Image 1 (cartoon, rainbow, N blue to C red):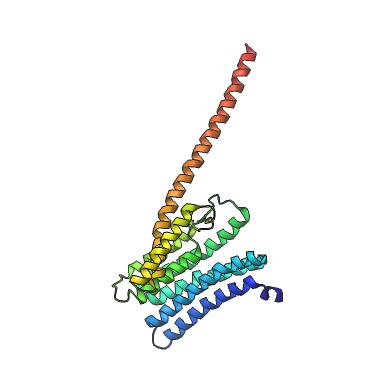
Image 2 (cartoon, helix red, strand yellow):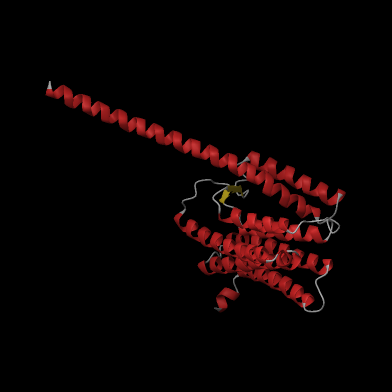
Length: 276
């Protein structure tokens, strides 16, 4: 077990777990002492976002140091369930879902379950390698779902503190993020940046929009604009990609069937000619 503690990628995964647990701790502590203010909620959301940054770094460190292990994969999945499943759901619960009654409870549990199922499916697909769309993930990743959710909570408690948000909107947002995680809609993961000029352009434009939002509106809008763009433009890109891939697959299937039918027809004609 000591060797796993000494493995550098696991340090970043552990740092992600620390940020998530610390975020929950300060929120629960504040809730037990009179209520959670906007400053505490914003700090907790920032901690979860930092956990996401550490989560993105652990895989890169593993590849750089060539210290990729099965133990690290399992540890990363557990960290994702805590950091981007449980932590965002509970922050959303403290923020607004607790005021939505039974629907808030259902949405909170639904989100955590979807995050767990999404990670389990990812681990299985990573072994089978059955996902054909390079540069896209199968469904919304837990990291992006959790990051988007805590970003919405952060913006609502900071820049949008004066907004009037109906009680059903947070329930719908949390339930929708859960559904996107377990769906098969492709979401761009930008892992093909080196070979895909279009992906580089999309990422550059998105970062420019995030910077503009942070400078003109509020620093929190760097993440707010990024989450909004990724969910809207990413969803549109995923639907178009899924339709294009399905049409391509159907066209290849039709060509294969026509070729097989033509070969079968030639065989039948030869058989009939031999009878004559």
